[in-house]
Image (cartoon, rainbow, N blue to C red; front, side):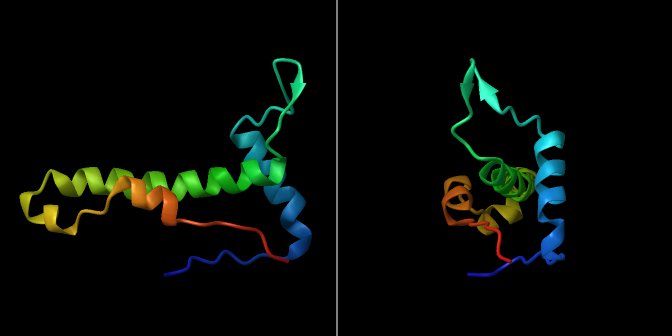
Length: 88
């Protein structure tokens, strides 16, 4: 598999998570209950969603070109094969 790596100082992780949570409306509680998804997991899901969403949009544009149909990538494979995570 190919890999996309975003490197930044470990000390920035709280700021990165805070920004992703704020920009994407993370909610600490849902219907009065604690959110079962952690802020870190939510932030990673937002990064994954940004990248996979761009690939899916690109696929739809390519599909409008008959010659591009052969280069099609299944949207379900994009979701299941794309992995993101934090490492220090």
